[in-house]
Image (cartoon, rainbow, N blue to C red; front, top):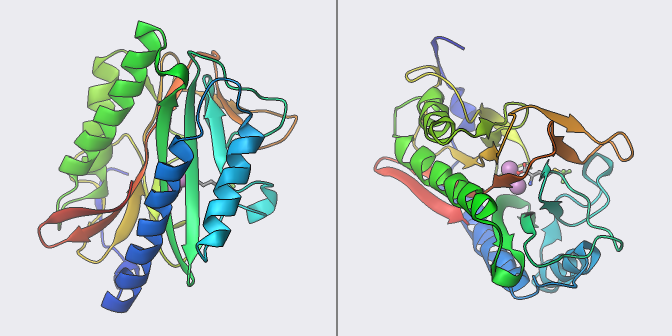
Length: 258
Ligand code: MF3
Ligand code: CO
Ligand code: CO
C-alpha cells in the first residue's frame, strides 16, 4: 500500500460511542488483571477460559469471541509456538517456562474493547523466550509512539517491524490490528509492517488496536487443520504478542484497554 489513503469519516466515533467503548475497556482491563492471578503451572487453558467467562458475565459483559464465527471459547490462549487464536481446552496444562498470550474482547452495553498480554508461567523461562516477550512489548510501545494524529497507518507498522527485525525476529503479516468499538473487527486494519506515510490517515476519534505478533524465527504461519483456528509459527518456534485498544486524540493515543 505505497500511497496515502483517505479514511472514511464513519470510522470516527461519536463522543457517546467513545464513552461506551471506554467503559467496555475498563471492564476488559479489569478482566485481564483478574485472569492474571490464575496463571500458574498446573492450570489448564480451559480453567482460564472459565475464569474469563465467569468474570465477564458477572460484571454485565459478554465475551465477544464466544461463538464468533464458530469460535467456541471466551478468550484465546496461545502458548509458546502458537501465534494467536489458540483454543482453550482441558488437555492443555500450563508448565513452568511456558509463555502464554491471553487475548480477551469484552462487549459491554453493545460496545467492544480488545486487549491481550503475555504471561511467563512460573515467572521464569529461557533467556531467549524472555527476550522475545520483552521485544514484543517494546514493539507495541514503539507502534503506539509512532501513531500520531493526522499521521498514517503505515507509520505504525514501519516502526514496529524495524524494531523486531533489528532483533532478528519475524513479524507476522497474516493478522493485524484493527478498528474496534461497535464490532469486534472494523476498519481500518493496522498491519505491523509497512512504509511511513502510507495507508489510511489516523484521525482523532478513531478507536483501534495495535497487536504485534513477533516470531522468534520465520514470520510465516500456518493454521492447524485439526481445528481451523490455532495459528502456529511456520518453524514452530515461540511467538509473542501484546495488544491494547486505543483512542486517537488531538494529542496522540489514549489507552482504552490494556
Ligand atoms: N481478540 C482477537 C483480536 O485481537 C480476536 C479473536 S477472534 C477469535 O483480534 F475468534 F479467534 F477469538
Ligand atoms: Co485481541
Ligand atoms: Co484485536
